[in-house]
Amino acid sequence: MAHKVFIFDTTLRDGEQTPGANLNVDEKLQIARHLELLNVDVIEAGFPFSSPGDFEAVRAVAREIRGPQIAGLARAFVQDIDACWEAVKEATDPRIHTFISTSDIHLKHQMRKSREEVLEMAVAAVKYACRYTSNVEFSAMDASRSDLDYVVQVFTAVIDAGATTLNFPDTVGYSIPEEFGAKIKYLVDHIPNLHRAILSVHCHNDLGLAVANTLAAVSNGVRQVEVTINGLGERAGNASLEEVVMSLATRGDLLHYYTDIVTQYIYPTSRLTSKLSGVPVQPNKAIVGANAFAHESGIHQDGVLKEASTFEIMTPNSVGIKKSTMPLGKLSGRHAFKNKLREMGFYLNDEELNRVFTRFKSLADRKKTVFDEDLISLVETEVIYKSVPEHFKLAELVVLAGTMARPSANVKMEVGGHLAGPYSVLGDGPIDATYKAITHLAGSKCTLLKFAVSSITGGTDAQGEVTVRLEEDGRVVTGQGVDPDVITASARAFINGLNRLHFLKETEAVKGPKPEEL
Image 1 (tube, rainbow, N blue to C red):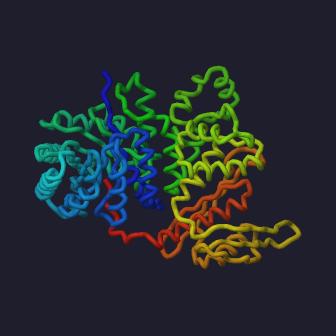
Image 2 (tube, rainbow, N blue to C red; image 1 turned 90 degrees about the vertical axis):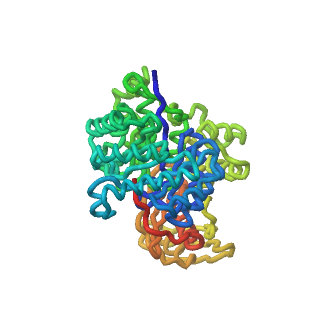
C-alpha cells in the first residue's frame, strides 16, 4: 500500500535566505498563490520575529491562503513564539515551528549550553507553543551531526510536551544517503511514542545530496519532507521540491509513496520563483531547466520522434511544460490568447490580461511566430515585475552606433510622474551610453554588478532577455527587461532595477540579525 508524503515548502523562509534573494510582501504572496495551486501541504511563510517586514509577509500569507497549513519559524524563545502566533493565527490551519540545536558542536561553540539545558528549553518551547495551537513542529537543528540517543531523548520529550511533527534536519548537508537513511531507521526504532507524531526531514545540498538524502529518509519512515522550489536556500540550497516530487511520481515501482502535488503547476511556479527571487535556473537543472526536455543528439531526436519514452522518463506536460500546437500570431484574438495563458498555468485578472495582450499584439507585429517562451516573458514582465511601483518609466530611447560613429544615446524618462529629459550622452557602446543617460535622469548613484543577455527563442527576431544586478548603499536588487531590441531590453532591465532600489528605500523595514537556518 502506498503511503502519503506531506510536502512542507519553505521557499518563502529558507529559500529567501539564498544570497542575493529578497522578496517583498506582494512577491511572497504571488509565490504563495502558486504553492496553493501546487497543493503543497504546508507553506512555511517566514520567520516572523526576525523583522517587521517578515512578520507582515507571514501575516499576509496567513490571511489570504486558505488551502495549505501556514507555518512560521520561531526559536525556542517566548518572544519568538508570541510573534509567530500573531503572524499565523488567521490561517485556516496555523502551525508554529520552533527549533533549537542538538549537536555537541553547536551546543559548545554557538549556544554554550549543556544537553540538559537544551532539553529543558526544547520542552518549554513546545509546551508554550501548545498554549496557542495543537499544530506544533519541533526541529533539532544540526540533528544529523548530533548524538542519536540524545536526539531520541529530546524527540521523546517534545512529543510528550505536545509536538505533532518532529524534524530531523541535515543542516549543513553533511550526510550520505545510506548513512542518513540508517539514522532515520534508528529514530523510528527507538522513539517509543513516535506513533503520536509525524517524522520530517530538512536536507541541505552542500554535497549535492539533498534530494538523495530526502528520498533515503522517506524509504526509512519519514512522512514529511521540507523542500523549496528550484532548491533555493542557504549556501548550496535545499532539497528541490520538483525533484523529490517527480522522483516519487516517476519511480512508484520502487518508491511506494505519493504526494498530493498537482505537478502541472511545477514549471510555472519554478519560473515565477526564479524571476521574483532573481536567482536563475541553470539550463541543465532537473525537471525545470531549459534543457530538461531538449534533445540535441540526432539519435535522441530520432528516438523521441518515434516514441517519446525512448529518451523521456516523464512527459513535459506532467510538470507544466507544454508545446505549442497552435502558434499565436497577430491575427489571434483575446479569447484564444486568454485560453493559451490558462493552459500555461497563468490566471490573470482583466487589467493584467489587457496589459499583456497589448504587449503581445505589439510583439506579434514585429515577430513572425510568438512562442510559449515569449508569452511567459510577457507575463513575467507585465505582471510579475509590475509588483514594484514604477517610479521611473522609459518614455523615449534613440541610440546611434556603428563602425563610423561614436555610440550615443538620447533618453527621455518619467521620474515620479514628471517628464525628464531628453538627455544625450556618449558611451563606450550603445548600452553604456544608454545606462549613462538613464543614471543621469534618475539621479542614481547605483553600481552595475552584473549584466547578462540571452535569447528567449531562436531566430534573428527572437526577444532579448536582459538581467542586471544593481547595488546602492548596501542594497542589491535584480532587474529584468525583455524586448526584440536588445538595447531597449537593456534599458527596461536597468529601469526595473532602479524601481526596485527606489521601492526598497521607500518601504523596507530594518531587519534584525539574520535568522538561524535549520
